[in-house]
Image (cartoon, rainbow, N blue to C red):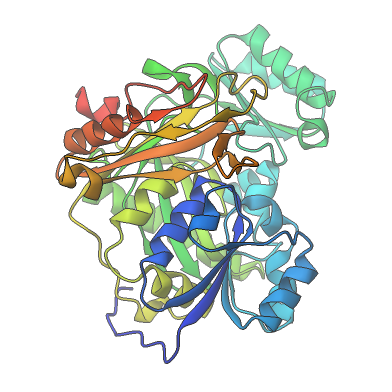
Length: 437
């Protein structure tokens, strides 16, 4: 799987990154440092990606393909799930364009939680006991058969927010009712998955696949809850760290044999070979990895920590993934840890906040700090005077690198202290699970 050869690009490569978040900014940062990359484009990008490359105002997938043909774009990387589910990869490949990501059929692993759960069951991949239904009566009956807490999931895409962990049976019934009525998540929730709650610790594992071969990145741990100690509502993610020492060789081996291999073989057997990022949401229960969900793209904010850990060419990684050549990839990682802290706007995740100017203090004394901490921008736009404004829910991620998780955490929070905007808030305990062991 890690047959090491040298990948030689005979000319510089123009790259298009589709998306607008911290994930896409982080991929852009990594590619900008690659000497093989010439021009870097973002569609649509955010208010800070224009410092890394050129933002495009094109949204139509066909027009993006036209742009790639006209501007010699050798590789397109798709960040978010929505264009994948909509079939952008199919369109680009039909036109002979290189693009990294799964087909629309393969993207059902994230586009439909019902499809995903049934796929896991068909291929004997370990997952929680569940039902999929559009019947409130059936949902209620299954809810009453489970012990609380109980997990209720909307079937379709909900921006990472379509999962409710109900603390009792009444909460679970309410969540199911609001989803099935369309009140919670619209059409995305009119079919649901109800499943047992698994009590363990959660991991984010990423396998980059080319339809035949794959490589696995260091496991990360995400912090979904809004407040410290994993309290409050679920969010898109308030921070993450990688690699996590909560994963040992035995767990990696189980994931390989019981999860990744049967999934890729199953996708191929069902006529939809998987190419792209397979994001595996794992719950480890008594040292056994149980699959919570699949996504078909990098997690955000996990991507912000994983990109700077890659020592070898990031362009090679994506290019070989897009051209079915991962078997010839040489993949190396820095012997470091990364911790990322999300800084959110005042009213996140409840409602939109008033735009606020972002001020970042100059770092003048600590060269080591400057070299080992950076910002990945997400929910930001440019003001009329060129100033950077916090306009999204998750505004930016402060990333620290270090020889230990503690050192990386300290640097991330030092950077948090340098960033100012009205209403900013963040968790103060990212990576606490491992540091408090």
